[in-house]
Length: 367
Image 1 (spheres, rainbow, N blue to C red):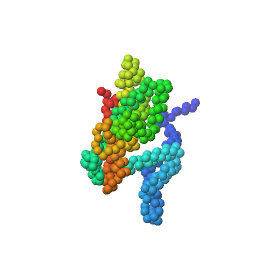
Image 2: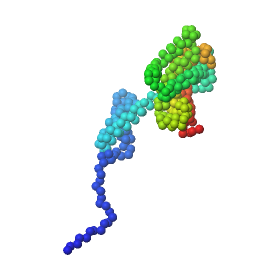
Image 3: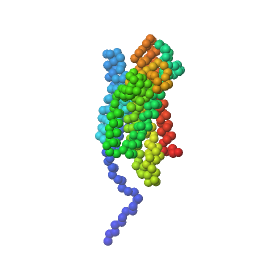
Image 4: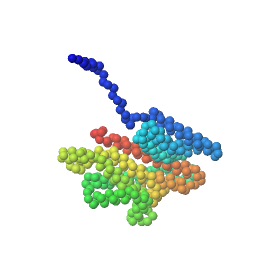
């Protein structure tokens, strides 16, 4: 009788067969994207260098653009060879999205640099403390235009924000049926109307009461309010719809009236988005020229009364300084660029204030 003994276990498992995973089979080395980008830029520079030998001028912008265009097929080709088709598609889309973002940033950066370089020439104390009354050449300032812009834009915000916010609350919380659909249709139509139509509407409205040829600051504010209302309505409506229904239901289940639920729950929850939408509406109208030129007119003197006389604004100030150049022309152009820079800084300051307000009233900071 033969007894076969079983070999003792060594505690080691047999080596498992390697798992082939197509998603991790191969990867480009770290930094390969930058290497490929640098290579195609060098190739593009060589091509434009050869062209410069005949033309006598090297086109740096063209070399960078051609290099960026060549990078897209290059990164796709190398990735498809090493990493496979799926990873290559991902890198291709990433390159296209990044290129689109950089392309969109070019005009923004260009405008910013241009306005800063040309607007700082007259960015002095006189520009912010003087008006253009009795000024025909150098000197003067835009204090009357700054005050007019702040007054008319602030009045337009006071008119449009309550109307737009209450309209959006009605559409989200109460509106049903044909009335709500009709309001949404009218808001969509108002969103697309040209700004000059709003100016003509405000001029015609005040001409009924004060006669033809009337130019008032309040008329300009009404024209801006017509442009602001649809933006406030649409942005606030979308923010209110993002509030979870569970929050409303929990408040109503505790016996809280619906209007108090809206005031204490819905609005505080969406206040950050609503504030952002309001600031977008203000930025939309603060640079309008045509409606203010028709409804409020322009003047070279200070005017603090919106119900009497013409009122200047920064966009109209920039337009008049550029269109009606005197002697010397450089003084008028410097004032125009300084006015444009001031307008950009006002919009930036308003956006910073809006972010601080939204941060303070955000629900996570509770009161």
